[in-house]
Structure formats: C-alpha cells, structure tokens
Length: 405
Ligand SMILES: [Zn+2]
Image (cartoon, rainbow, N blue to C red; front, side, top):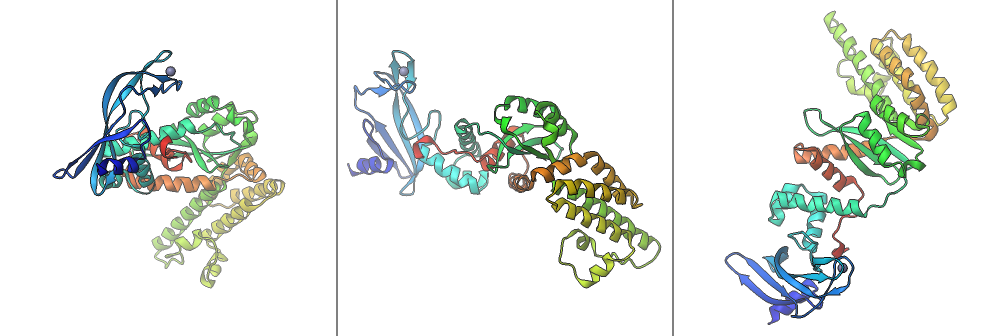
C-alpha cells in the first residue's frame, strides 16, 4: 500500500522499524500510523548499547505534526529489552524522546514557536493543551541545562526582578561574556546568593567583576564568598545615574509645586522630560538650565555625575567624585544631599566599575525582555514557572530534541 511507503519516507523510518498500517478516520480528521518491527529483532540496550532480546512490549502513542491536513498520531508496541547487565529497559525509538507524548519533530516545531509566541497561542495553534505546551517547554529547558557545560565565568551581573504584583522577587545571575542568564535564584537574600556562589566556586575562579545595584544583601554575599570580592564589586552606572535622575525629578516637582502655591506661573510647567533626557536641548531649555532655579542646580549636578560616569580613568574618577560629593552636600537641595550620602557610602564600587569597565547594560536589556515575558504571560503563578520561562528565552541553551539536531 502506497500510504505505508509515504509515511515511512515522511517519518524517515529505518530498519528495523516500518509502517505496519495507516488508518484514516475522516470524521475525526485523524490519521493513525502504526509502526512495527519484525518479530525476533533485537534492540540495543538504551544504557550500554548491547544488542539484547525483546522482553515484552508496551503500547505508546505520539502526536506528530499534521500530515495532509490531518491530526497525525504514531502508535507502536515499543519493546522492552532484557539486558544481561541493566535488566529490563524500554528501547529508545528514533522518532521521540523517552517519556514524551509528542514526536521529536513535533516538539522541535513547538519549541521554535514558543520562542516567538505565548504558551496559549502556541497551544491553540498546535491544538494541544496549555499544560502540554508548558511540558514541552519544561523538557526543552531541562535538556538545555543538562547539555550546558560549566563555562568559566569572568564577568557576571546580578539583578533582582519581581515576578508577581505582591513583591515576590527572584535574583537573576547573568553571564556578561556570553550574554545569557546563568541561573535564576529564589528571592534576593544574601544567604541564597552565598550558597549559589558556593555551589559554583569552580566556574567562579576566573571571576573578574560582579555588576549589581547598591544592594547590601548582594554586596554581603560577594564579600563573604568570593576571594577579593570587594575589589570585584561594581555598581552599575545606569543604576547610579537613576539616583541622580530621581533626585532631580523630586527637586523639580517640589519647586514647581512651590511656584503654584505662591500663585505664580511656574517656569517648570511641562518641562519634566526635558530635564531628564540627554541632548539635544533647545534654546528655551538652555536658558532655563542656566537660571538660578533649584531644578537647574540639581540638573547641573546630574550632568556632572553623568560626565563622571563616562570617565575612563578611575584615578580621576575617584578625585572628581569627591569634589562632586562636596558640591552636592552643600547644595541645600535635600534629595541631592541624600543621594550624596548614599554615593559616598558606595563610592568604592562605583570607582571599581570605572576601573574594570563593568556595566550591567546588557542585564538591563535582559531585564526588559523579562518584563515583556511577564506582560505576555500576565504574571506568573509560581516561581518555578517564571524561572523556566526566563531560562527558555534567555538561558542561551541548546534545547532541541537529540533526534532533530
Ligand atoms: Zn545494558
């Protein structure tokens, strides 16, 4: 029968497997392909590869990619062999991985789709349940993690991200050299990060820098676990710049409110974004920025800090930061004075970042992707699912089933 040959070709079946029967159910728009093997065939033991006699059979079914517009199911009596060394084992079939209800090709297509679309869209498109799609994703991540070699880590970034509205956090460890997420840890506590460091000491022997926000739990973990950790901690300049932007915006909002309370026209009306954005500025803004407004002073301080954060020489940076901090302390702008206090405390790590040329810029783009994934999934019900999705999209993993690589 031609059908059988066609399906043997489509499935790329090789000895000893062949298509025994193809049965079409028109009303269900389903085609079932029954795969068999000759009686008396021997199969390799899945553990040691030694040809072993068949012990018994177990019927299994796999959903395959549609053929000719029909839902396609493969069905086979899969032999269990009896290996003299490893006992009774189910043989590995060439079209699907052990334990999966889908063929490898089906999983491969699902994985490609999951890379670009949401779980529910993929589930709908492939006509499988949401749980089944999630299962394919989970197996893909597990496969990828099992294949991943322990790369030495030289530059890493550590950042927190929330995964639910109720302020639940995970800590994302990022490999800045390979541009991928290494791991996702529960919470953002010092002890969690410490035990992760402990478990990865071998890969961390080459560590040169750790970028992070000025977050004491992370600082403590690095200090207490990594040799010369204090020399390697780098406070990311984007985070530092944010402190200045926030202080500036607070000064502007307060000053604007004060104008209005005094019944005056505020020169700050609708200028919020002008102050925060970088160049180019128009003439009206330039004259505002040169004025005696408190906001203008806070802006000049922010610009001076931005300049310092761009500096390449760390000796100059350390000296100029101290000058800027003195200026800030005397500024009589409360939000700016507060930032000065914070920066003074953490200046060592800001200067480390200049010395080591470290930045979390790439983490930020990873974080942006994480935010997008969150939006797409409408929040995550639990942490392990959230971790899985991050590793699926950002883990740099090789996740395709063995048979289709
Ligand atoms: Zn064996």
